[in-house]
Image 1 (cartoon, protein in one colour):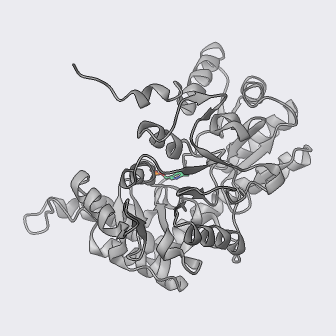
Image 2: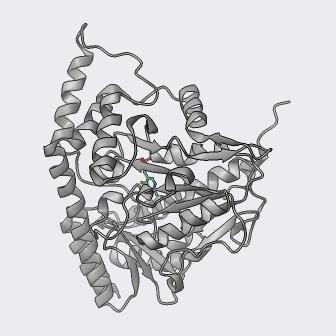
Image 3: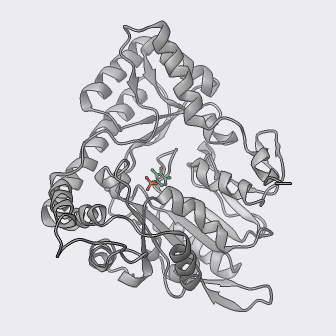
Length: 407
Ligand SMILES: *Cc1c(COP(=O)(O)O)cnc(C)c1O
């Protein structure tokens, strides 16, 4: 008899974005003439930077030549890309990360989802609420939770991100072993200061915990006082793994390229309390289950670090940040309080007592604007919606005009 992993049965049936897609499709069917503006899903809308396209074309041509064809590459990624990342994203900023601590992959979603395989099922996991759903669902699948009761999985320590703490969770009041953090945050758009992040690193050192730091949106940070990498904090190399992606800075959501940083000192413990280094474990896992990102895509990603690439990706994030500023300004003028939008492409809007899905339906039906209901990201998201800056300037302006009329 083939028995199933019953942990899958604990998962909540509808993935947030398929639920949204269903409601949008139903509305569009009944209102075929309506031009719906999507400020919902966190997907970029602008094309790849020309520098990346040029590199991609060139690499495709290489695949057509006897002398330049490439078969399987190194599972961890080509040296040219790992070195470019280490030099530009870290060393140029005075952060110690070497090329062989960087693992290239086809997505930070997969990496943040897969990383938990390195740990036992009996660890105590702390996950933000609201949250990018991947962290939670992959721990459910792995059997680290009990059932879903009253909007929460039993056994998970929820790090509440609410207005009262400026959407930056407080340290846990009991011991946890694995901590997920994401800054700039999806969905709240909140950022964390150096001092704030230092508290988490110190906590992890003291309690022998590990931090999984999702920095997918670091390219949106303009405030120079904010940390772009957790490794800017002393001691973080022992206690943190960082996830980054080319999806949001360079528009690779459909192209697929990301990377995970596992410093050599980053440690875990066996059941006897003996130290083991996670670099070796992740390397083993990655090489066993993953066969590398395609060569042309890695060439395209490396072009992000060329002079033109740097200018062009900065232009991309500037463009979205301008949209974010417009959304933030208009929503504030309408009397709503919100988080994010300054160093992040998301604006997290307090619905002033409205239920998240009611607010979503109202904006869809009356303004023809798609947002993301905050409750879809967790219990603490109830009463909020997320607006995304990923759209054209024209659409953002039009959407905000319609919202003004509606509200
Ligand atoms: C978009 C996003 C990512 C990036 O995922 P990819 O798989 O690299 O496209 C990672 N984390 C968060 C929180 C995100 O919103």
